[in-house]
Image (cartoon, rainbow, N blue to C red; front, side, top):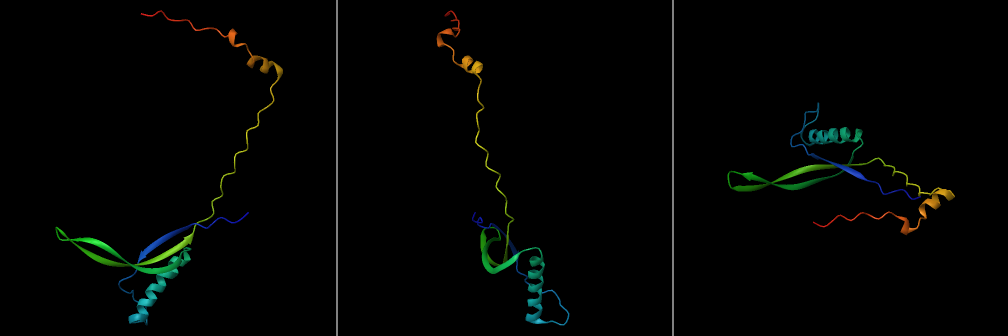
Length: 121
């Protein structure tokens, strides 16, 4: 039986705007270490880093105007555990009936009691 297609869930995390302090590091190395911390933390939870994207977000600016701000996001993915499909129901098998129950089912339609008619008002 072929393996079903994997299903995934995704997690988007805002990319850091400022680096956290790492002893002995400055500038780009410090920022890279900050990103590395995020990737390692989420990797330990089973998330795989996919990519970074920059996406627009429209925001209100004042009472009537709007501005567009661009957000940097880190995108992670992990495979969902396979969910076993419930077993298919077995087809219903009718039990054999004895002759007495068959005789009960085979009655003459003329033998059924008729409904009483109500007088019309």
